[in-house]
Image (cartoon, rainbow, N blue to C red; front, side, top):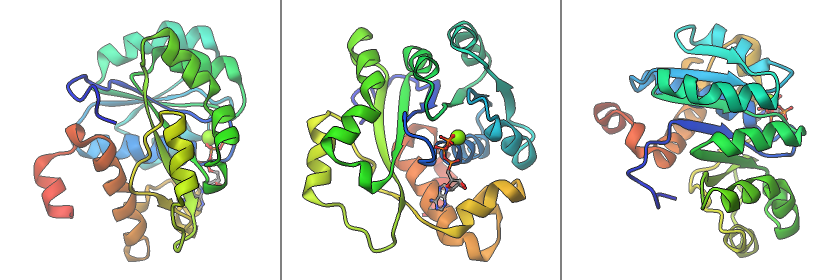
Length: 228
Ligand SMILES: Nc1ncnc2c1ncn2[C@@H]1O[C@H](COP(=O)(O)OP(=O)(O)OP(=O)(O)O)[C@@H](O)[C@H]1O
Ligand SMILES: [Mg+2]
């Protein structure tokens, strides 16, 4: 994961050509977390449904939210947004290949949420085809990491799943996002889970630990000690 540990991951896209895998959930929570770590964050909503920009405006109005409506806008606007922010989090669409391609040609890091059922070589290869094309063109960039999404509390990562990720040179984050009602409730309440009270505590801890795992360089030292 941290092959280019020293490189600043300014543009982070949440990418998976499958719909409904948790991309917007990851995008909004990551933007909120980075903001809370003291960074200047822009959320680029590149999905025509525009759900993540509305959600982040309600949850964390201090995060700048912009909508990039087509591949040309994405290619043209992302560098300028990155120059004005510490991090740009780009939420991708579920199915529009050209939009995903534009994002992956500009991103430094791609976070790929996957349901456990997708961790099988052929499904995973299909879901990440455009990612591999971009990495091939750009000499390995964007770096990518798979995040297991919506897994049952008792799930276990099987050797087959690990092998599928390894076969495609995709590292897998150790911490998964489990299937919890609180994640599904968060957008309707315009909130991120760690601000939703005691019933959301486990979800809040899980998702913040996940972000510290993926982006240790972005975590505030003191807060990462306190919350562990
Ligand atoms: N860990 C989770 N547990 C329970 N529900 C979840 C979880 N993550 C996401 N959801 C819910 O699943 C649905 C799909 O999630 P989300 O919108 O984040 O996916 P997406 O990949 O952005 O979808 P799309 O491709 O349509 O943009 C939403 O209703 C969301 O609230
Ligand atoms: Mg979405």
